[in-house]
Image (cartoon, rainbow, N blue to C red; front, top):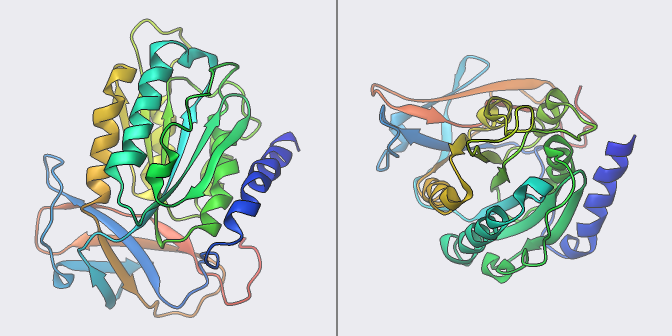
Length: 301
């Protein structure tokens, strides 16, 4: 109950700011849009592919690709920054700097972003804002305190992506600690995120000498980021946050956007998506599925 109330409060903080924006993004559309990252065996980003290089399967059945672009399209980006006590000192200074550079220099003017912080409670710092560079400095007043509730923060942030401006979306989590205070479990957070479609990225600060049981848990974060098409990167210290966020921005600049019209009518059930590059030894990352909600449909199972 407490987590549910926190989620409602978190979202109400943003309602007035977002209600004047464009109509909310919904999954109940004829065309399913899929963002795809392509890499080679060394993890290098691959560009220059064409529509004919790709194949999309829904529940194992090939789907004709009706929309395709390899050009950068605007993105709606959310940032969740750990503001718990363990981030005191140099860590929070480096984190603020990395987030400021991300929204101020690494995103494009047409992109929008929000910034939120969390300790044992989630807190909205700035709702959807465009251009994103207007968010520079908004974290300067954040003073680390309290414990860490990553899963509650993820659950609270998920509904914001229903009120975004752009189809392509991403969420970046920055944390240096294991979840020690959430009411929601890892499985519950995964289930909530499964109903959204942003790429989820996590930067896990794992400094040597941390206390056992409170050090960041990269495996748990990978369970969250992997199904979305994103990834978890472990860094040795907060001074590595700048390069890590730059790698995320570089990926966002080199993704493909594909669309297809499902061969089956929507039935409210889960549809598995697989995107692959034909005849080449490349690797793809994309969301692994979606709920096929009918027009005017209610909650999914």
